[in-house]
Image (cartoon, rainbow, N blue to C red; front, side, top):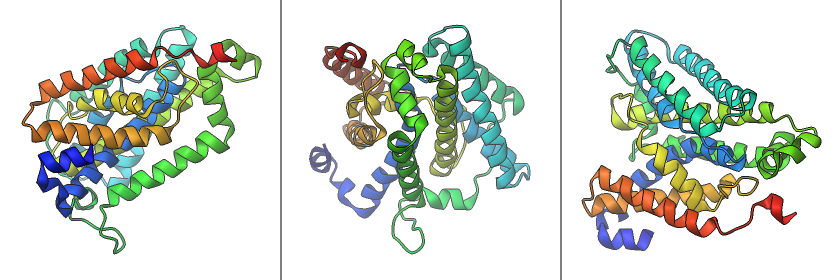
Length: 299
């Protein structure tokens, strides 16, 4: 994919071009953490775009009003946890599919943000956030954007949790078989709350980084990440049936998805057609992966 991209868009081989790909991959990679875990427990999180937009708008509007960055971060953490708890609890208590629940929560979040800021989404972006996502930026003397190091930190933490902790094993167990996981003393509601809370927290981080990348704010800025996070997860090979996969696979999917999207832009394909192409890619891969039996049927 990178070779095709280099031939179609030679500018991508410049330092600025490569660093731009790295920044875009970092933002998508962070946003795709929650989608990966949601899919691994046989769910999905449609509230990621709304959460990204929430963090993006609140950061810029509140910072312009004189709020300290630490205060804004604390507020975003509280709101993200509330979103995660709502998704996890509602889908567990009432037996609703997370697709329906997260879609409803997304609508509440977007509407609530617009009410809170009275429709005014403009504001200021902290300078260090802009520097963190600048293709020409550096971190501790290393000529790489700080956003990349944030992604690497998130990646390490997620992989360790998946492979070395009880909650990581419970994620796989719940996605494999709900009944069997209950008999193994897994608490489905707790696992879902953790998964969707992590998803919302990572989406908020992505929203903050996007504020620096775009230089402004929009409640709709996270919309493209609905398809792109799902695409990254599916391309990476995590089973949509749940119980199998890992974030390490999603990292590969993130790189491919970012390069594919950049290639479409290089061919001057507009955002609407980009959505169509990503949708086709998702359908094609689902058709292939859908032939696999669920892990519960292979035990």
